[in-house]
View (cartoon, rainbow, N blue to C red):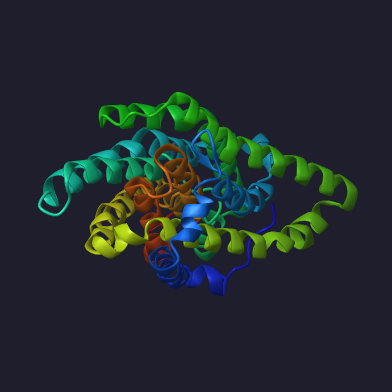
Length: 348
């Protein structure tokens, strides 16, 4: 896969501003035009919101096209970096998220959050923790001068692991939290929001590359969908916040309370992966993306599954949406940290 632009786009740089704007618009719709979310809520199948599913497909499908799974043949190239990515993302991150979120929602913030709300906020946090980033990582990798080819391998293998690990990890951790999660809905969510767009992205990549060539696909074709991804994300956020309008207006403090453990988790996971790469004497071009993949989240998947499992108006869906709100400013700070500490790493 070709390297991403060295700079971050205006949309990506100000994503938090866009999310806040979407929150204001969505809450306004929920407050003053409640008939709109009420009407859209009528369209669902197997507890999955059809309008939400369409928007999430629009958002995720272009991301899946960007991942060249043929790069997996290079999996043996410097495998230590891959081991760090896999171990941190799947054996550490979901469980530290569960522990940190539990501590804050049930103990530290006990005076502000009821046990029922704490349980649902925890569920949303778990969904974020079990979904490592697959798209924005290319931006973070580029900003830290990461090895683009190696980043593709890290992301591609993560996408494959999601197919088999996401459901059992989420089911286990939510079961520990006494949250009832139907297997069929959870599996359906992964099929709808990972398998289908992943298969569509692979098929599209193969067909277009075969007809027009790899250079055309990566420099022209994929770029055509950038606007669709942006539009899908923004409309999804407006829709979620319109469903969450009353909850936010009644409990604005909760946005901050949810953000605290999510931000702490982000710094912790980055530190674990980044320091592990340093101890293994890996080059900065591998260490920085490894830290970024674990620190950031596949929030599109987390939001989709939260909506499917708990509903568009659920506190769990709100918690995953707060993950979107905190993602960019925190990740940009980590990019600065990674760049300033580049001299500590091997240059090989």
